[in-house]
Length: 211
Image (cartoon, rainbow, N blue to C red; front, side):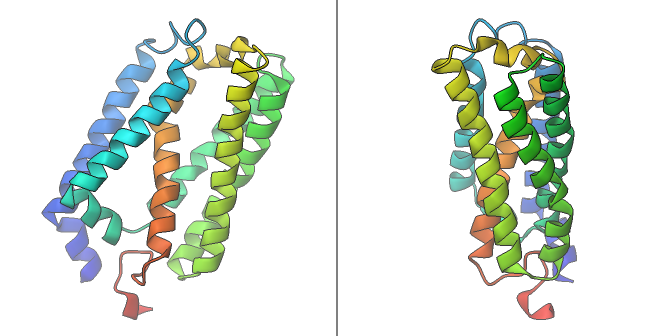
């Protein structure tokens, strides 16, 4: 009954509609080549978009009671399973690195880590359903470390080593979706999971006493 009430709660509905609108807007931007046309000449656009969008989402969450209600009650498993997209991106990084189209250091660091973190999202979601907080915490910490390592490696290669061609694949879809949707959702998801793990409520949105 509690899960049903969350699903039809007007506040949760508003958040879901906002997320759908974000997805639609991100797809329009990603396929329009707005990012691709400037990413090589202005490589700062990628981290600026990731940081700016993520920060804006956090500010909206802080000021919106509907968003706070959603993150306090919604089932975490879809957020965990979203990380499955990292398997596809990680495999693509490895393939591009092997073909010489992506810097091998970044391809290896980001590729292997994303494949592992993404693949482990399946058992992590299953564990969340069973209420295994420590194991979900371990996966979340590992996956967050991986994404931060990948982002840090990219910035080092670009700004210290001068490897601006690192962003060459970012000119094309679906890589143009990374800074406007995928990376912000991954980072926000990690923060959301950590926040929920600190609370006694169940990770699936069901009452804590039902398990």
